[in-house]
Image (tube, rainbow over all chains, first blue to last red; front, side, top):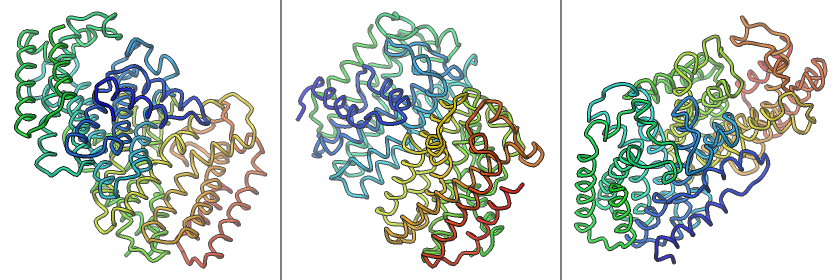
Length: 291
Length: 291
């Protein structure tokens, strides 16, 4: 059993590799692997495994779901980077998927990941009963689709060049970012058969952490460098995207991160959660906001 | 209970409309509705409902799955039509999704449909137990992803301008077209709790009908007109796509359709299936090949 962040990440990477074996037609699998296995913090799958462990589940039972969530994350990045969306050339220090392969392959690799993820939850979760699998796939679909990620992405695109309200910004950040954090934490709790009160608490925790994480992204887009981030920065400002920093400034953004992370701590202590991993993730977000 | 093709189609359209209620952010739902509710033959959902009925299931229990399969079909058309794929401007007599909305919206509408479909199977199939739902979603994922539709689409794209073998053409047609016919017929049988032998027979029947249907499409691309088909024709030839007619000529294509439909009849009679609807579908494909 992994007991620190590095071991969690290794466990996830090993299984992502296993779930993405290359078969014919090779290009589609190579394209999926290219984005999914690119170096990353694996925050979402780590949160899924850790949430399962915290509430008494077996980490191994959560591995397929954790990997599915990372695949969904990679899918959203592949499609977000397309020329018709954010038109990004670099991601995680490498050419984006459509630059390394082709636009057609990038669209199809994203599509393939969207349905491979629930397929893996269903086929690889040997110890989970059908009821639990159904709940997991349902939560996955809600987070991935027009009531989750896609809702955030389309409002984000529509808002370019426009002055938006704080409420609209909250909608975008909630769905584009926090929904996957919530999915990860809730899925772990569902696998561990935690009760509804706990699942609701994980939803709240995911909202705090996801929102704080996204505000950090907005701060970094203003203050960091290509070398540090592995992607072109300042693009949000150039595209006149509404970011938290554009609406409220960097100072208020940093204090909002502190406020959200304090709320996260409250949820953790109120639910008697002991988790070095969650503490480490919170500390990581905290440090990120000060970069 | 519907007892002819028109009533089946009405039932499906009514439920597609119900499952695609417009909510915020409107544009994504409008875009999904635009393609899913466009006039169509609804062959796949009709086959799903009819397969369920044939094997003793209740048609109403198959409605969410039938609609999900039509959504998947619409999704594949939206993404196939994109400029980076087949770059089509018309579909079913109307501007393609990315022409009517935008490329970004079309990509996102396709993504949203890919996960809304299994969400509807899970949430709307009130009378199905979790085991059956899991089987349906599993079959859906296999047909939609890198082992199904996407496999066919990527090999199709890679084959443009190249002389391909009959085996590669069979791979493309099987996955791009027949996989959805198979999914529809198998899903109906799964909902009716038919045995494995029947499900295998439905797989074979879907292969015959799907393959015959696709050969007809290839024939029509050569012999029909924009007015009849509602889309730009001759494009496959222009793009040097390998079609059945390009490899074997129209005459051999027509005789292959007859051969495949005879096989379909054999499967139907061997399994003691009485279905006016299936007969009508077979007749429709037969007539199509002679257009």
